[in-house]
Length: 120
Picture 1 (cartoon, rainbow, N blue to C red):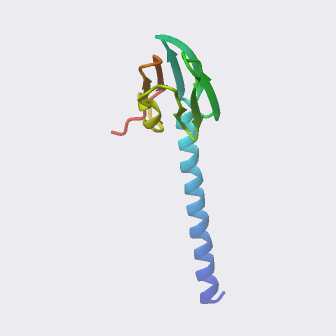
Picture 2 (cartoon, one colour; picture 1 turned 60 degrees about the horizontal axis):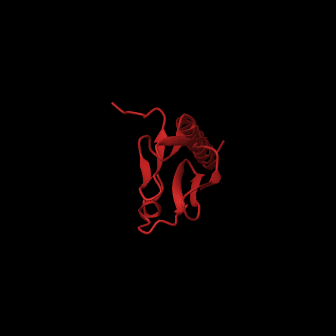
Picture 3 (cartoon, one colour; picture 1 turned 120 degrees about the vertical axis):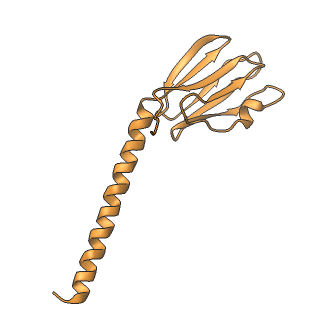
Protein backbone atom coordinates (compact mmCIF):
# COMPACT_ATOMS: atom_id res chain seq x y z
CA UNK A 1 0.00 0.00 0.00
CA UNK A 2 1.20 3.47 -0.85
CA UNK A 3 1.10 6.57 1.34
CA UNK A 4 -1.98 7.92 -0.50
CA UNK A 5 -3.83 4.64 0.14
CA UNK A 6 -3.18 4.93 3.88
CA UNK A 7 -4.39 8.54 3.92
CA UNK A 8 -7.56 7.56 2.07
CA UNK A 9 -8.17 4.66 4.49
CA UNK A 10 -7.74 6.93 7.52
CA UNK A 11 -10.12 9.53 6.05
CA UNK A 12 -12.77 6.87 5.37
CA UNK A 13 -12.45 5.51 8.93
CA UNK A 14 -12.75 9.05 10.39
CA UNK A 15 -15.91 9.79 8.39
CA UNK A 16 -17.41 6.41 9.38
CA UNK A 17 -16.64 7.12 13.05
CA UNK A 18 -18.25 10.56 12.90
CA UNK A 19 -21.38 9.13 11.24
CA UNK A 20 -21.65 6.43 13.91
CA UNK A 21 -21.31 9.04 16.67
CA UNK A 22 -23.87 11.31 15.04
CA UNK A 23 -26.33 8.41 14.70
CA UNK A 24 -25.90 7.48 18.37
CA UNK A 25 -26.54 11.08 19.46
CA UNK A 26 -29.73 11.26 17.38
CA UNK A 27 -31.02 8.04 18.94
CA UNK A 28 -30.42 9.48 22.42
CA UNK A 29 -32.40 12.62 21.53
CA UNK A 30 -35.32 10.56 20.20
CA UNK A 31 -35.30 8.35 23.29
CA UNK A 32 -35.43 11.45 25.50
CA UNK A 33 -38.46 12.83 23.64
CA UNK A 34 -40.40 9.53 23.71
CA UNK A 35 -41.05 10.00 27.43
CA UNK A 36 -42.52 13.49 26.97
CA UNK A 37 -46.20 14.29 26.59
CA UNK A 38 -48.12 17.44 25.74
CA UNK A 39 -50.91 17.95 28.28
CA UNK A 40 -53.69 20.32 27.20
CA UNK A 41 -56.00 21.69 29.89
CA UNK A 42 -59.04 23.82 29.21
CA UNK A 43 -60.83 25.57 32.08
CA UNK A 44 -58.88 23.54 34.66
CA UNK A 45 -59.79 20.14 33.19
CA UNK A 46 -57.41 17.92 31.20
CA UNK A 47 -58.71 18.08 27.64
CA UNK A 48 -56.16 15.86 25.88
CA UNK A 49 -52.74 14.24 26.36
CA UNK A 50 -50.58 13.71 23.25
CA UNK A 51 -47.13 12.31 22.57
CA UNK A 52 -44.62 14.97 21.65
CA UNK A 53 -43.28 12.62 18.95
CA UNK A 54 -46.58 12.47 17.03
CA UNK A 55 -46.87 15.39 14.59
CA UNK A 56 -50.39 16.80 14.53
CA UNK A 57 -52.47 19.94 14.39
CA UNK A 58 -55.18 20.24 17.06
CA UNK A 59 -58.17 22.56 16.98
CA UNK A 60 -58.96 23.52 20.57
CA UNK A 61 -62.51 24.67 21.28
CA UNK A 62 -62.87 28.26 22.49
CA UNK A 63 -65.71 30.77 22.83
CA UNK A 64 -64.98 32.21 19.37
CA UNK A 65 -62.99 30.52 16.64
CA UNK A 66 -60.87 27.50 17.48
CA UNK A 67 -57.33 27.95 18.72
CA UNK A 68 -54.83 25.84 16.76
CA UNK A 69 -52.02 23.95 18.54
CA UNK A 70 -49.29 22.34 16.43
CA UNK A 71 -47.13 19.48 17.71
CA UNK A 72 -44.04 18.75 15.61
CA UNK A 73 -40.27 18.30 15.77
CA UNK A 74 -40.27 17.43 19.47
CA UNK A 75 -42.14 20.55 20.56
CA UNK A 76 -45.42 22.43 20.26
CA UNK A 77 -46.69 25.94 19.63
CA UNK A 78 -49.95 27.83 19.22
CA UNK A 79 -50.37 28.50 15.51
CA UNK A 80 -53.38 30.76 15.94
CA UNK A 81 -55.90 31.97 18.49
CA UNK A 82 -58.69 34.51 18.41
CA UNK A 83 -57.78 36.12 21.72
CA UNK A 84 -57.03 39.87 21.61
CA UNK A 85 -53.50 39.88 23.04
CA UNK A 86 -52.01 36.86 21.13
CA UNK A 87 -49.54 36.15 23.96
CA UNK A 88 -49.99 32.39 23.52
CA UNK A 89 -49.14 32.64 19.82
CA UNK A 90 -46.12 34.88 20.42
CA UNK A 91 -44.83 32.47 23.07
CA UNK A 92 -43.29 30.33 20.32
CA UNK A 93 -42.31 26.67 20.48
CA UNK A 94 -41.86 24.90 23.80
CA UNK A 95 -39.82 21.69 24.03
CA UNK A 96 -38.51 21.18 27.56
CA UNK A 97 -40.28 19.45 30.43
CA UNK A 98 -42.15 22.00 32.55
CA UNK A 99 -42.50 24.66 29.85
CA UNK A 100 -46.02 26.06 29.31
CA UNK A 101 -48.14 28.00 26.91
CA UNK A 102 -50.96 29.88 28.63
CA UNK A 103 -53.96 31.55 27.00
CA UNK A 104 -55.80 33.34 29.80
CA UNK A 105 -58.80 34.59 27.78
CA UNK A 106 -59.66 31.01 26.74
CA UNK A 107 -58.37 29.33 29.93
CA UNK A 108 -56.03 27.04 27.92
CA UNK A 109 -52.81 25.71 29.44
CA UNK A 110 -50.45 23.55 27.37
CA UNK A 111 -47.69 21.86 29.38
CA UNK A 112 -44.87 19.49 28.47
CA UNK A 113 -44.63 16.70 31.01
CA UNK A 114 -42.24 13.80 31.37
CA UNK A 115 -38.95 13.02 33.00
CA UNK A 116 -36.51 15.91 33.02
CA UNK A 117 -32.90 15.11 32.21
CA UNK A 118 -30.48 16.57 34.74
CA UNK A 119 -26.73 16.72 34.16
CA UNK A 120 -24.59 16.54 37.27
